[in-house]
Image (cartoon, rainbow, N blue to C red; front, side, top):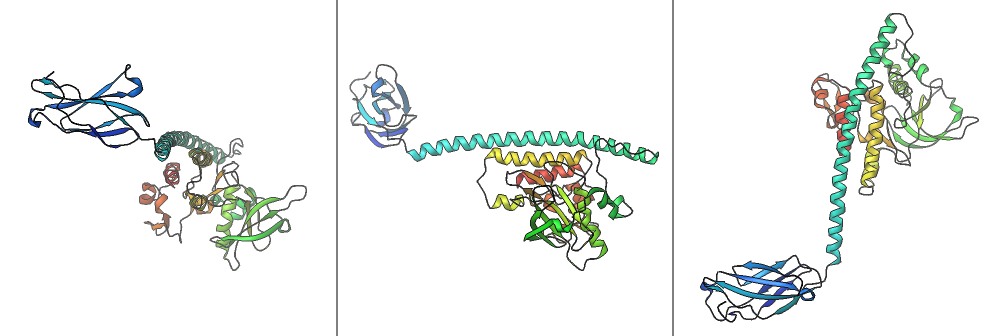
Length: 385
């Protein structure tokens, strides 16, 4: 040690809840002789237990990693080519109190980070289960379809165990498909309350289905507008003959049809919260990660069921998912397995039709090849939505 300290008064320039900025002036030896400075510090109450130190080449330093609302004792000494000077006198400075907003932001950051990480993990797991389920389901459906065709051509009645989707377009008379898969409802059992929207073929209403001996059921009624052509009627009822083949808690349920009087109607279960896209937009930020993943899981369950039956949806999007009062999501809009002619989100294809390009897999856009794999692509877009 060269002798007494050459340092003047150590000053506190500023302090936060976890740091203190110090500066000092040289009063004896020229700055050119100083190699660096050593700042030793410790909590005032912990003098005999532990201390820390830091080095700086300038007559100032910012000491970080301190505790809020705590008094610290600081000594400063210089190092020259010949050795150390003596320490300066003790100087006591306190950190500021912790800002509640900062603490809250830290907690929020931890929660958000954990939520995002958990959500990402669940999304990856969901995709993995969905894709593996699709592959297995697709193979099963193909095997069942081949078995069904083999038995049909050999004159045997198809096996009636696990159902396989039957395309209504394969019927010589489309009306036969409606009669086979949809139940005819007496129009006197239908009570229409109000119009809730307009579809491609007519109005969509909410109402009640009153069947003797059963509790009233809330339903949505799709009506076919007057002046329709026979082809429009067949296309309208085609959706009923599709939905009528499905029985899954994440697929919209068909209650029945009205075909023997006018207007022609398709009656399905009523979903209180409407379309998923509008539902999410009007409630942005109101759902937990678990609730959102629960919705995604419901959609995945419904789509897995369709894949297992050998059905390709072709138009999976949030707008075609309906949400009930318990946030259960159900796949709907099965009339859109045809091309879309009036969709603003559509793009022209080589065949002259239109498809919703934003949700459609590349191979479906380029070659018009739809499959369970292209439905998986659309599911990924729904996850983003």
